[in-house]
Image 1 (cartoon, rainbow, N blue to C red):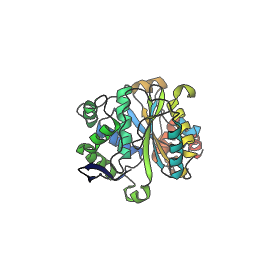
Image 2 (cartoon, helix red, strand yellow; image 1 turned 30 degrees about the vertical axis):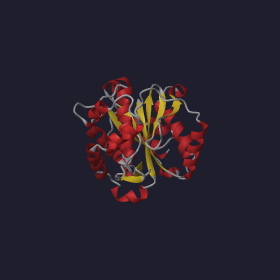
Image 3 (cartoon, one colour; image 1 turned 90 degrees about the vertical axis):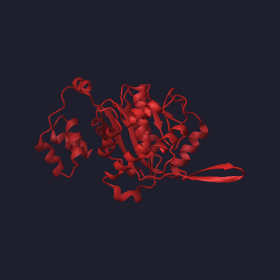
Image 4 (cartoon, rainbow, N blue to C red; image 1 turned 180 degrees about the vertical axis):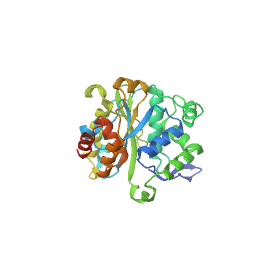
Length: 300
């Protein structure tokens, strides 16, 4: 992203130096806490997507309403994007999709978070907490505002800058920012039965798929896009990271039955095998509390 903006007046060029933040970590705990701090609906949780294989998708609660993607930028993806831009074959996004341009260095994580929160509040039953940053942002948003307008609004917002800084400081990988400088955050959001990609470095939202082609399951449809459009193109797929934003309110829990009881013994068994506690817990939930089946999920 450009570090400076230029404007000409009386034959002179004025240069406005852009802000540059520290990058946000792609970590469910960090992002989940960030969503809560900004005032997003408490019925939503962030879950790490460990793989694109069926066993990993089964571990993610439904309904999934958004998927965050962190990926390494490179010439291969840039070339594919340029080919796509020239082809102009994608469908028009639904009306009223909120999209902002990235005008701050390393703000892509926060922009992905805002894209997800704001659009789910506008296009689904998600809500913003009273008096929260998100509620104020939605009140200040006016129909007809351009992507550039929204980018400027974020750039001038000292509250979101402070919240981003706090979230970044809680990162478990804050010491590794130098190795993450070429990584980029985007988000896919479920809007009107479509998979809509929202990227602050693009000029507008991009429709990537239709849920009807995948049995109505947003996560399955989005994973297909990520695999074909990103992972199969990039020479470095091992550096990809994905998180799912899922609604896990009372209604969903009642519809699926009570969550399976997870014994401390089963959790300890999986952790003794070297699995992360959160991953082990998610696998046990997907396996109905059975440690052996959970281990098979994790081992693939």
